[in-house]
Image (cartoon, rainbow, N blue to C red):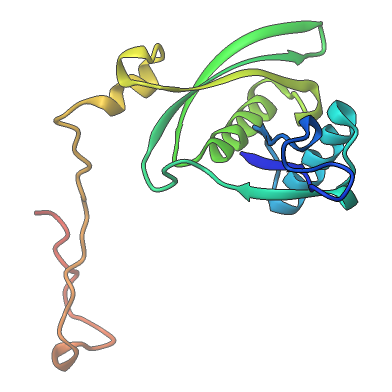
Length: 169
């Protein structure tokens, strides 16, 4: 999410319609690319150059919580244009977009330039459709830790042991 505007000056004050704040949802590899894309679209939409504008913030809402994301997108394959919907779990929207690009490259050989993201949404657990995502919503979900090697105190540690460690508990 990039937020920016035209910088007020002597000709255009704070109240001028040219100085209104624009917020764009952009997907880029890093912050530098996101800024660049923001100024590209600002130049097209409202004729504001980077020299006359300012970026107010670049942020992501709640980046430390795992969220469900849904993507509606169109992509070019070898046979034609297709519409599709996919779901991913990630901390940030940009991470989920990266998962989408990687998944489409692996499954359909679609390059990122051939994919147009039409809509993104943060989904509640009840709104999810795909079983791969739904299975992560269980309250009794557990991740067992098989084959754990016990840690030995430094005083008893040796390079070679006569017997293998017991890793089943």
